[in-house]
Every structure is written in structure tokens, then in C-alpha cells.
Length: 521
Image 1 (tube, one colour):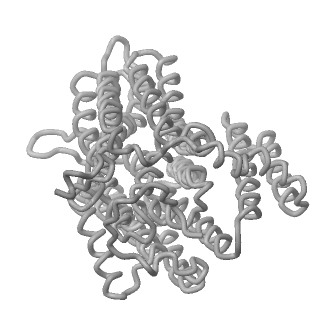
Image 2: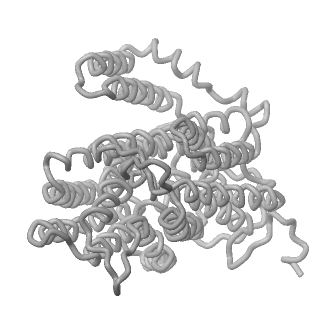
Image 3: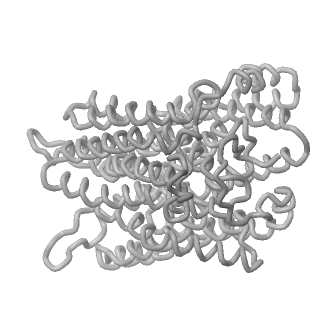
């Protein structure tokens, strides 16, 4: 009877708030649209330009395609910073997700139009839409759980299954539609998926009444706005000097870098400089040494996020093209569409996510090392080991002129296992340690780091044109493993700086989630 008498937003399903499953299906369809389109992106750009042919692409070189892929995937996540700020300061996460879903639906719809202007316009709308939706829906997931609730990591893993169910379905269906009927039908199908996500989200609002609401006037007045933070920068000579040096280098890069996107890199460096200044000013405005120490750990953990995605996102760029061009895709007389290999990663996530999350939870309850930092470092190492199989694939290609499909599948298996140790954990880690009044903004910074990792991935992919895949994959293996081992060596001092934020986690089933703050103070 107790469950029946609860308000809609207090009800649970399978031990978690019902609101988690609303956000699960919303994100599932959003990721269906995004990953469906991403699976086609580099393939469409490098396909030959043919007259009146549904399989006609843009006819770009590999270097050009990977460059745009890097910029696009970076901007998709970099826009999370203004998206998080707008939600934090003005409209709340709930409305921001609605606006993002509408922009995404429009963007994918425009991509279905067979024209170059529509291609760029659609990508622009998708960038804006993801920027509004991505950081804010993740913040809402964290808001469903109270402090020290051990279910939170598992909740994020369930949410992560939603992300990858959408990705899995998209990689198969969108890839097949594009192969049979043409690229733009594939883009159109991705748009239909986003429309379904918007409908699910609007229908499930009654389960989300207590999270993601607009800030009250009192909260706004007590908050420190971006303008104030940047104004304070001019009162801090050291921090201002760091930002000015970075901005000077950005201008220098614009005038001296070679290539058509030299000013693109200059603008990127300017953005990084401003983000650096913002992060320093937030640090100065935090309350007490504990909050400041935890903030330092968050910033250091961003390096792991950046390194991980800089390596991992070869999947959508270089490895996607490798599957299309250099892999023997014949299976019992039928050629497997290249885009289908993008379904291996989400498919493995659906199979492994709950098991890996349960493994870490049981390990923690037994008193063994299972901190977020430890899991993230292990994730980087496992992901790096996955590139060993791409080294074998490249060696086989050089010897025989093609490589077997199983090398790609094995690489994706290790990449996925590493991802499950790092990505949902790092999301949850941020909601545990980030200052509550900057929560969505810090989630925006998290996704911005992911975006920078995507751009790094694009630059690394471009280098393969000259260096060759064998050197690139081998270098990524060595670097990722060494970086993960370095973090493990620094684990104890980093854990001390968290001041036991993860030491008191237990199972909490409490009806009173209103007023819940996402960080410990």
C-alpha cells in the first residue's frame, strides 16, 4: 500500500526511481538519433560524389572528413558549457532538455534534405541541441538520488544502457537504411528517433517534478554569475597572466598554423583559455578547503576523461573508415555494411553494463579498492589494451591486403569494457564532488573535456594518413596503458583530496528527495 500512496515522483521500479526510466528512454532515443547520424558521418563525407545516385557522398578526402568529424564531435560537447550555464542560472535542467530535444529533432530532419546547405545547417542544429540536452539530463539523473546513496553508480549504469541501446539500434537500422536507400534516408530515420525521445520525455514529466527545476530568485541572488567570475579574473594577476598568455598563443596559432582551419584552432585555444580562467575563478569562490580539494580532484580527473576519449573516439573516425576500406567484411557470401561495426560497442555495453557495475559495487561493500579514480584508471588501461588488436589487424592488412573482422570486434570488446569502468563512473563522480551551485556548469565542463577528446581523436586520425594505422594504433596502446598506470601510482594522494566523499555510501530508499543537493559540503 505504501508504494500505491506515494506521489508519482516518489515511486520506484526495480529499486530505482521511476524518473530514471523516463530519462533512460529519452536518452535512448536521443542517442539513437545522434549515433545513427555519427555512424554515417565519415562514410558519407568520403563516399564518391555521383550524379543522381542515393549512394552519392561529398567526395572528400580522408583527411578532410576526419578534420570535420573532429570539429563537429568536439563542438557537440563543448556547447555543453553554455547549455549547463543557461540551465543553472535561468531555466533549470528540465526546460533545457526540452529545448535541446526540439533543436535535435529539427537538426536531424534538416539533414534528411539532400543539399550541402542542409548538411551544415543540420549539423549546427544538432550541435546546439546536444549542448542543451547532454549536461542537463545527466544532472537530473544524479538529482534522483540522495547523498551517499550507493545506488547512484548503478543508476548511472542503467542510464548508460539507455544511451547504448539507442546507439545499438541506430547503428544497425540507420546503417542498413542508408545502405539500401541512401544516406539521407538514414539521416531522416535518425530524426524520427529523436522525435520519439521528445514525446517520451514530455509524457514522463510527472515523474520528474522534483528535479531539474528553474532556480529560485533566492538561489539566483546567492549565485555568482559568469560575468562576476570573469570580472574577478582582472583582480588576480597570476590567473590573469595565465589566461593572457594562452590568448596570445591562440592569436599566434591563427597567423602561423598551416591548413585551412588554422583560425579554427586559434578559436579553440581562445575557448580553452577562457574555460581555464573560469575554472580558476570558481576555485577562488569555493567555500572551505574540503570543497576546494575535491574541486582539484575533479579537474585532474578531466585529464583522464580527455585522454580516454581522445583514444576511444577513433571508433567513429579512423576505425570506422578502417572497417569500410581495409577489413574483409564478407560473411557467408554477404558483405556486412561498414556502419554495422558501430553497433559492436553499444551491443557489448548492453550485455556487460549491469554485470560490471555490480562487480564494482560488491567489491566496494567487501572493503576492497573500488574508488571512482581507481575504476577510471583501470578503464583507461583496458581501453588501451584494445588497440593491440588493431595493431594485429594492421599487420595482417599489410601482409594480405585486408584484415579479419574479428580484430575489430575484439578491439571493441576491450574498448567497451574500459568505457564501462570509466564513463558512467566519471559521470557519477562529478555529481558527487562538484559544487552544487555550479553543478550543471561543471557537467558542461565534463562534456567539454569529452569534446576536446573527440577533437584530439580527429587530429590523431588525420595523422594516420602519413604515419600509417600501425604506428597510430601502437602509439595509442602504449600511451593509454602508461597513463593509466601513472594515475594508479598517484591514487592515494588523490583519494585523500576527496576527503572521504565515497566512504559512506550505502543503500538509501528515502522518499524525501526534494531539496537534495548533488554535492557534499
